[in-house]
Length: 187
Image (cartoon, rainbow, N blue to C red; front, top):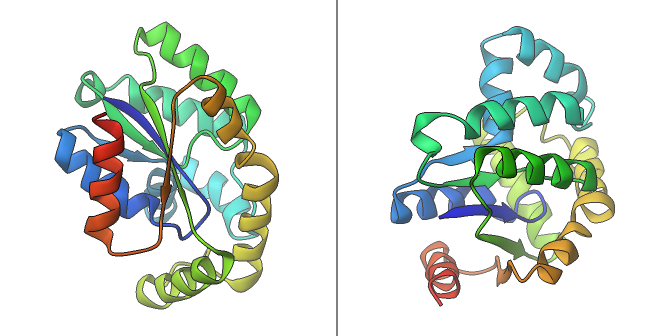
């Protein structure tokens, strides 16, 4: 199973990706986690990414595409994966399509989670307090949600036209949301 999990910041993509990865026995690959790991460990990639994330900006496509391609080519991803946080714009959709064609691994489905703006803001504020994430400031959050609405949300139409979109309400009990996703994917 090769899946994308998409939705605005704070909708629960990471939580659901982890649960689905366990359910299907495939890795959950989060571009955000990869960047945060590199930032924490002050790698060259991390220091480059930090220039953008601290301002609430997204890491440039070229850098993001490179790390995604490298990660999807790893042995543990040969039988499937769940990609969280990518693609986030039309250019990245094209890059992902090219990567998957080159790897001979077509995309199966796109899970789109959604929730009201107030729910998202509440969840992100809670996450910032619990995890102390430097990229969860009110200004950075507002900028990322606006960027999602303008650049990433329109991509859902691309996947809907391809017949790959599975839309799921991201509000409710975590295990119930996961059960809804699995039921929709296993149809």
